[in-house]
Length: 185
Image (cartoon, rainbow, N blue to C red; front, side, top):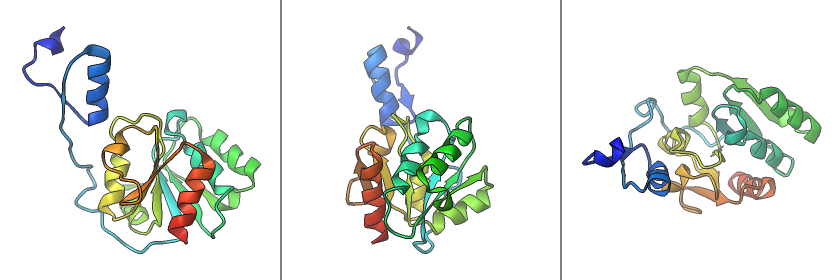
């Protein structure tokens, strides 16, 4: 009721504005703001790893990137920066799939390390489910890296254009691997 009385309503992204409209019937305008690392991110080389950044939680779907590594036919690693309740499960998944030697769990990293990781990544895999906004997408772009995201990832679609600045693929390991192989080609 209180939001309905406001003359203007802002959200952090178009995806969250869409939710406000869907669930509350209220119109809102997206008011984007830059990530806190914006002034420090820059392009480096296109390295031999795909970077995943974020909490290791089910909704962030790091498992899809790990599963994709079983289908990546290039000498590429997956580096995962972040912590979360699913880390042990994700490490076990990498082991079961036989990709433990190509998936590195970096844990929480400091800002300087994260800036370097973005700079030298081949690409960034960011495939959460229905993400609000996703600073990861903007951080990757500021480092001039393509973003691989899923068709149901939500917020990243406000920025990622398939075959222009990244890849928008089904939330499927083979589709994600195909995008990684293409960038590594």
